[in-house]
Length: 370
Image 1 (cartoon, rainbow, N blue to C red):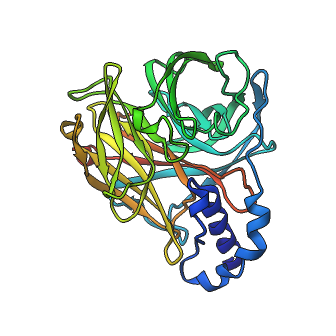
Image 2: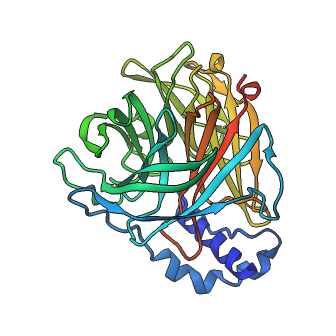
């Protein structure tokens, strides 16, 4: 167990953004053991690459879903910070094209999802529930994110999709924005029950990102309410020397600065908006001595405006004592009782041996939304 955890931590470290600067190993107190693996593992793991998503048309896929009964690995507990545990799944499929999910979008009732991977693929599936607990993903399809010419994105720098947000309509008939890192841009796609279609519009990145190949627009969403309802916001993954994550809010076609205070060295991996414009931020951190951690922050809608430096409240934080992995995707919906549900997915870096694709769900009580 110690060996696998150490190796898994090292694999996450090499797979995350800023690979050139990352040589840290995740495993709590087993750092000495983990350190001995660097030399033997670095060549094999460093040479790995994302699989091509060379699908000319969507294909069906059977997803195996193993339930996660307890969020804590040693069992027990229903409340974590301000969130309440609903349930989770470990997901897998018999194809190399499944995995790497960095952004997720839920239908209004939480029954359907669309996820994008940083290999340039998309997943569309139906979530089956038993009561409030997710139990399976059915009617699943895999497809390739395509360029203007209708062909799958092939170059690594072009296909690094990190986030997806609904900009109009529904998952059955609407439009979705997808943010890309490395070749920084936001692309608007037509979205139907058949998946993502050809691009409708390509939105140029802020000037600061036009020549930057790493640490681009990692987190992105469209505000559903508040003073700037309908506006798009986006943020960088890592903080700069000033201790802030660079961010922007689009006023018309112009991105205006909107930064986030960095707390405790966490990276910012996803964003989502509640109906009133409350902004939720998903964050991830890893160190040699602590392992991987996950955190959720809540930003008041009144605080979200051009020129602001956002901070907010911590809703929940978790470490390797809980069922987490490289958590990168965040979606929001309301259940039949009107409760706000958060869905969090992990990016397994296409490494099934050492990492997992997780789907976790929590309830955000109304008292925690304000």
